[in-house]
Image 1: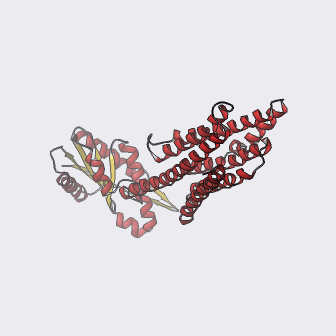
Image 2: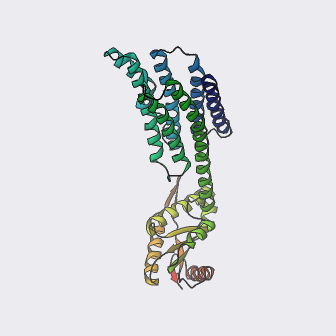
Image 3: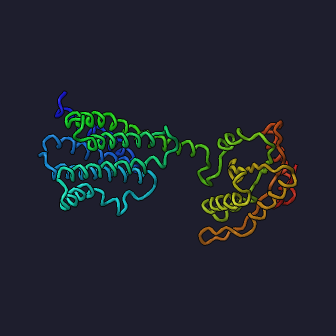
Length: 364
């Protein structure tokens, strides 16, 4: 396979990978990152297809590095968009001008134009390595898709920079171009599959999180609570909480205001119990708090704090001011206890709290 054919196939690989990203993006246009990566790959493909026919002069090669820098800019914007940031910053927008500017500056200072062109190429490689560094800094592990996409960019940058640094040695220009083209073939595919896998991994994590969390209040649901309890082996305190007269709140103020009361209560309860305890919505207006208090007296004090936080002030929902209270049943759950039986004991205590007039804590 001759060098021209390698350039053509390299262009086809980049164009195909770019279209793949754009195709996936077209099914869910919220993923702007895929569109940016896709267009960046298309630009790489177009530049790779034009390179064999470009005049072998410093101005053309430096201009092609700047064109590739547009692709780098879009890749960088894609990763920033994936991270929830604005795709571009003002400094990033100057990247496409860097290689050509370096070449023109050094040439005007009296450098040989071929050396200035090599400096422009190294500037392009440095920016690509900087993008890879930005990408890998937010990895979840050294083997995750994000890290692999960074490795592919490092390898491509190195495959371009090393021949430039070794120019005039044992590495001939033709063999260097062949090496660069072959590396780009493979690493472009690796990069594309990695960023697609990265988006898929994020979507899977979102779906898994949504399956464990109550969508209205943001606290754990029954499934999330069951999973969280697996890792807890020490004695636990269970507090079953029920909002008093919640049906009256819904009937008087409407279900939207009732939802706001539920959200407000979970915020107050979470702030009161701290990060070590678990808060789960079991259904309707019933919640379960699982804490690691060592005795029933500590648990009762924490439950009382939750009760006082609930009645501290009314909930503001639109024009409405909605006061509410809670009743709480508290029990201990030792490591040898059956969890469901402990929940039943807490439920019995909650029933006593309601039967005794509500807005109170009862232990069992």
